Length: 498
Ligand code: NAD
Image (cartoon, rainbow, N blue to C red; front, top):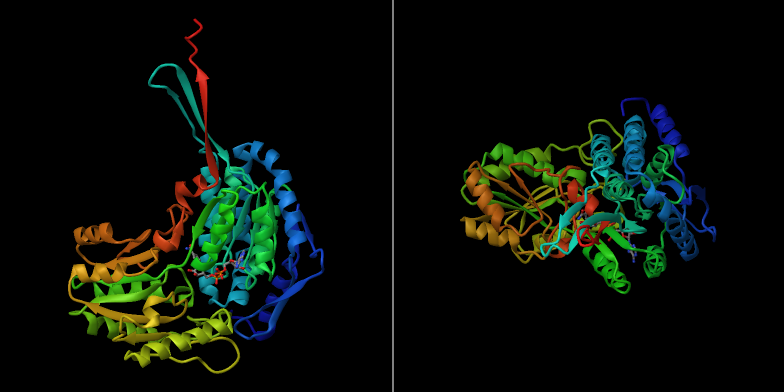
């Protein structure tokens, strides 16, 4: 922000004053039935930003009642009406982009420019699914035996529980809410306790756009298990869509199995980025910066293992070190900041542990490697070389600004290293030989591949993983299919009575 400190504070106060802190149940903002609350912190300062209502099991029951009651009429609402609500919401997100960006920077720390980028990306799901809502095609066919006519239609799945993480507070919500609205489902959205403000602000946008009461219910809480246990056990629920860690995803899948619920799981990642000997190294370094440093490395799509052909490793490391070393660390609200704080103290401490473990096993720190002084949860952008394969930083999801570089000598070794993880979300390949890029793509066990690019996310593309990175896809034509079910109507042959 370019303004003086006092006017920055005025902007902060104004956006916080506009943001609901209650639970959205059946179109009304309410306190928790048991008056429970929790605080939301600014990770750049450690100061409390807001006190939120914290839903308990009885609030979850009210959420579920509201979603179930609204389901029948919402499913019958014409797709054009649903589409226009989403389109109005898209316009409102554009009008209120500065508020949304500021809120995200305040509650999760990313620099304002990146928060604005997320407003653009997150908003696009509203526009994309407003366009998809009316493309509700079925099929009419003749049975091969001639005895039936076949009507195949898509219907809304029914009430959904949507659970989102803190790292992309707007986009993770719009990526679920928009296709659910488009498909005619009602829902309970449970945002992460670290970042509920953006979700509540977004929910108010959906109400202002004309979404009927009960279609979207939003339930902030610091007791997520109480909410999921109540709602997932309710026989009226039809689907759970979750974005978050693999361990919580597995737990929710087990619970969902009890009622044979549909599930979509967008889970963790441990993305490789391969740089071949024929790559354009400047392009590969820019791609690595985007894939590693976006969101301070707190992204499921982050490149966590930079695999570079041995003949180009010196050049790649030198150029990447220069770029990483030049990044400005600071509060995301300040001008010229490239890297904000990590979301909480625990996240910052885990970076220290990962670096210490790698160094103990023989890795070299080329850039960074330490926490920064002062309040807030800052960790320096860190480049590691000569990282042994058993280092934790290569085996676990990093979720922070650490870039470990490894070398390889041929295609087979690169692919084997890339695939040597239980995760399978994002991957990146840099080569100037397009046939090689596509050939490697065939062998990569990942749901997403960036070929000579470091960012692939787009509302029109199907996003999702394989292996322990999840099930299902968000965005694209696939995104709405996750919220519909297929019904087949067999119709008597009209000629049989003629
Ligand atoms: P997390 O699993 O700790 O939490 C995710 C959400 O689940 C939060 O809302 C949390 O409150 C909730 N939760 C936790 N326990 C729960 C329970 N018992 N019942 C119901 N809800 C519960 O993950 P996080 O730390 O918020 O997010 C980081 C993780 O998310 C990383 O692993 C990252 O890779 C993943 N992620 C994946 C994608 C993707 O699209 N694949 C996108 C973003 C983040």
